Image 1 (cartoon, rainbow over the protein chains, first blue to last red):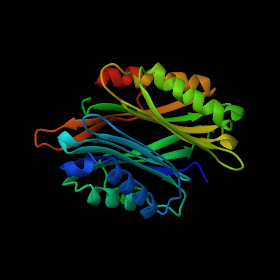
Image 2 (image 1 turned 180 degrees about the vertical axis):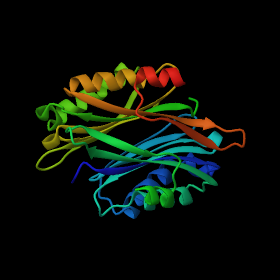
Image 3 (image 1 turned 180 degrees about the horizontal axis):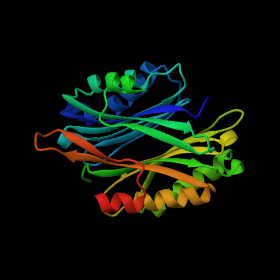
Image 4 (image 1 turned 90 degrees about the horizontal axis):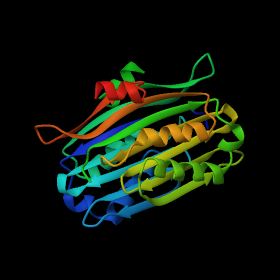
Length: 138
Length: 138
């Protein structure tokens, strides 16, 4: 796998409160989202907070997906980071947003692991970019 | 914990190849980095790739830290995302960069979970910002 990857940083608002507080459902959604992206799931680690809120990560062969939920605010902070031409993190993002019942989504796309001529690795930020905007400027 | 958090997206170049390929050392460094940030470690999930490379995540009570390494390139893609005034993800970032033997570091800081007046959550990107730059513009 090449270092080059796409990392979507996503804020989801107006989500379904019942889903955001349900560890089993959040975990299922994130694992399914990884599969939607055509990624290979390696490890899954989730935690439910008292009184509410879920944090969790899906480690994939192509990087990771993560989620942190604040049910009381209908808010989830979600990351979709995949490497490899065979994966599409936007599919994971769109899938998770739908399954979490998000009414709005704000995303920034970061192209990571870009080799510079001096041997250093850098990244390129497409701020507040949707799938189409990021593709246009790629 | 408030939704508001600081997420550092970090590319580390020129790292120690022997460290990047050693799951035990990478995991120890990331767990120690979480503690440097004054975060509470909840879950740890790491995987070693064949022939080399490590991916892993530390789920903390205040969000997560993640790492993906490409030893053959001396490169690591690392994230430090913490919520709460008691944490400082920059301490984790600086600690990990040093322990991984990074010769250079590129970071972008994202302030996440910022509530808008319309009830939607947004984020603010400080592109290619170091600790001091991000603090100045905060």
